[in-house]
Length: 459
Image: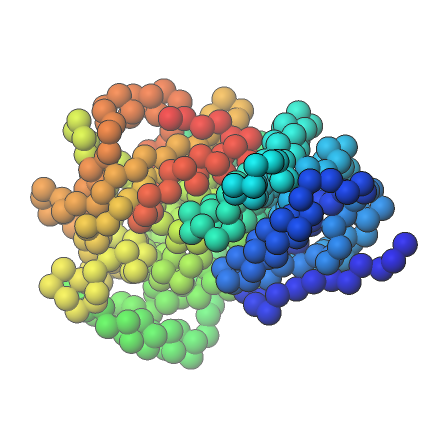
């Protein structure tokens, strides 16, 4: 069989495998099929997607297997399947056997206005979708003209969703200590986590973490303190010498994530750390999440995984927070002071962040700052209960709180929901007392991810 040359675009920011399903026997309008395929590849190139795959369409098991070998050799972790003419449905099961991750099916339109069926692309991809669903293989579906902006957005979302679902199955989350005292809703089952999401839980010692933080060399600590001061965040009721302990916490968590190959990390932040180290680690957590790392407090491992999901979907790590209050249409979110700095106002402004003491055990070091308002917002949570995983998301708008409290706070006006009814439904599904805030409306993205992960969606 003739060797298939690999095709690639000039852009290398987001490489995906692309397989074009062809036909052994000519049929439909092949000129239109070639034209719409070229437009699809061009659309991906213009989106910054590097398409890796054979120039020639695959038509049987042999050509499909060869195409997939070349795609794997190029390190692609996402596969887009184009079917410009309705092809062999049997190959859907071959592809499902040979590609364990989600498959993005892109159906392209008919030639407009020529009086006859030109491709049956949607019918072919519908057939493949039905086959994959019956086989229990995850997929995402995109339909439409490659030149339409809405279709391009759907394609990018499908790629990100597929990549995230696959990434989670190879991820490793660390848990320093356990959950905070009494916070049993965060208690983890490592085997349920592995069976449900494919994620490995790595338990780590809290006393050893404290020893690690204390043992970091003074030169690294001084250099990191300078990095904190360069952020331009004012000090309130704390001194510059207070920054060194939080730098030790920051560097210890950063080193631990690198050494253990952790994609996410949760730490039991109290009561030991403010008592033994003399400080809360919240500035350190704020800095790590600002840098795009998934780090949670109070032993909330599922919360850290949700942050990792947000990062992979390019929504940011989000703000892990308490659901403090609600009324019929709003939810008041608050936590003592570890929000990502990029979700706060600009440092130095009147409502910008300050480095301060915790409101309760009055020790350093928290990021005291209201969160930005006037933006679209989504409240999301991933959790486990009854030996399975659940996910939910609510959309709304970030509006100014009706009262000012220390720490990080935001009021979210929820669209078209009766909040008390939603809250009742969620707590009877076992949802823990933390939720995550993301800026943007992205509940549909989370819903689709829950489907890919086979996680129960709570509406």
